[in-house]
Image 1 (cartoon, one colour):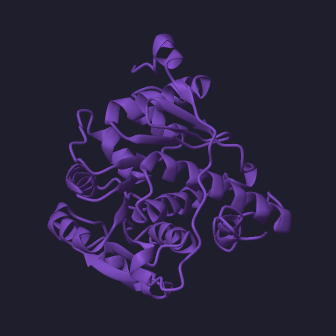
Image 2 (cartoon, helix red, strand yellow):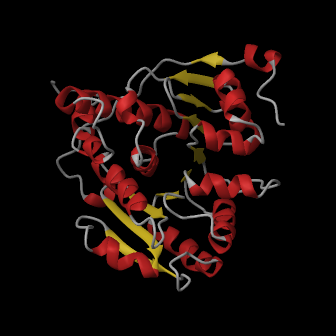
Length: 302
């Protein structure tokens, strides 16, 4: 089992409490100024996950968002996607992205400012190989979520070599797989576990759960927004899209992750006031994200 950060290492951590604010849009702002996000994920069985990530990115302010998904899943997504665009990736007959999609995915990055990989991608062998190669080679800031994290865990010796920033967004189960341990150990030392992930992969780690933790390996932020209604399928996909949206606007990865978990949790709190926690689903967050953003925008009265 991999151990979380040692006691000595934890003592060197700096607690961080600042929550970034946003500048209002300028009168001459155009959609290219607001950041371009590429979401890679989905398969025939799970087309909704990348859609949720794309919606999160759009609602968090990205000007242009594209979903790149298995070619065989395009029909399902096209019926629901209105404000984003779609790009097909080579896929198997049964609807899984193949390793052969890597070249096209890297080419697409030339047109985007940040990317997300993993939502709904599956653990098909070809998809796992594709995800791990893309995580290494993606030349732009990248959020790794869901099956992107599971692919990393499946490749025990994966080392992220790209100079571009990486933000990893595991829930406790995914964190346990990344550290070759179990959820009990993760939850027993959430800060140490998040720090261990950040240091091992040279990335910003976002350990989701009650009191989501954001760390770059030396600084630690513990989020205070959110409620149990966020514990529902697809909520994490929305968060991944929010993070990518801020990365696409050139926000530093640690600050982008902090603002994202705050906004995501605040949107959940606003949704809970309207409809309650018990029946909340991921799509309920989407309309509340702009409200939460307004609260963090400089010079805007709320």
